Length: 137
Image (cartoon, rainbow, N blue to C red; front, top):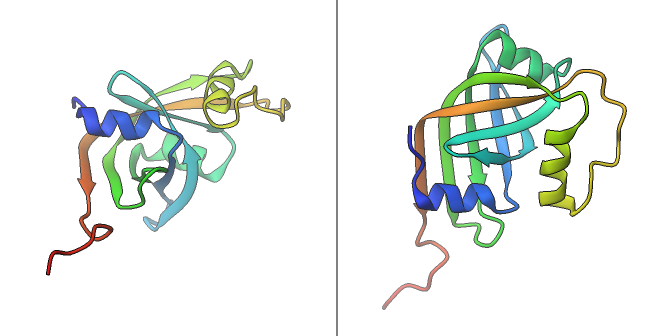
């Protein structure tokens, strides 16, 4: 699916995403994650041995809830699936994300099974709530 300009803009900011994966029993697990983007794919990084990494390998269906760091009433909701898992042993992908969020390479270097997970959206919705704006009387 092609991501809208508003979705891309929020993803390219220093936003934090809340990634939902599915546990083996079908229950959801949600964790905050850094987000990157290449074209219309959203990328996250984690160690393959983490629970979210194992969940995504077993069941690629995921959801992301993202709030703009500049405006808490601006949000992006994505439902999709992991379409690629790319090993990142040299931490090149993680360092790219770390430069976005921290301005430097990722400080912890000992990750023997680090990987990047590419998410393709089946649904990507941008929404800006009017709740934060004053109401006319």
